[in-house]
Amino acid sequence: MAVDIKNLNHNQLNDLIAKAQIRQDELRKEKVAKLREKVHALIKAEGYSFDDIFGGARGAKTRRVKTPVAPKYRNPANPEQTWSGRGKRPRWFNDALKAGKKEKDLAI
Image (cartoon, rainbow, N blue to C red; front, side):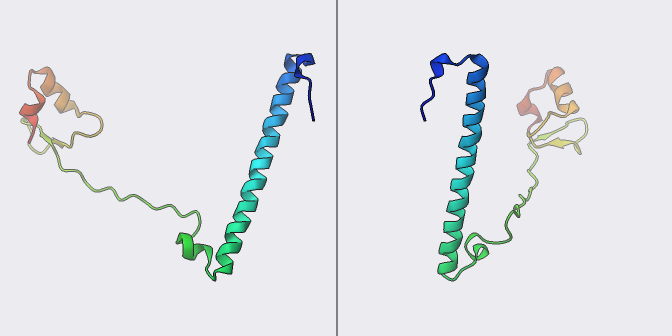
């Protein structure tokens, strides 16, 4: 199928591009579906299930366990206030820097 794009105006070109992109997406989805079928057939032929190979329930996301980070800085005016050095600086930290202290002065 040959299309003479030299004779197309701007709107016709945009329509052609949009249709081509839609068709390209359709072809990609068809190819993925065929590949998925092949993978499932191969897994079944070997006597396994999808979960045996790829583990757990499909679509289940593993949660990342957040472990607490040790504090790096301590407020000299209130030793209970600490900061790990991650995230937004606490107000006491910024106030101490404005007062002339250095980061190493506040380090634990």
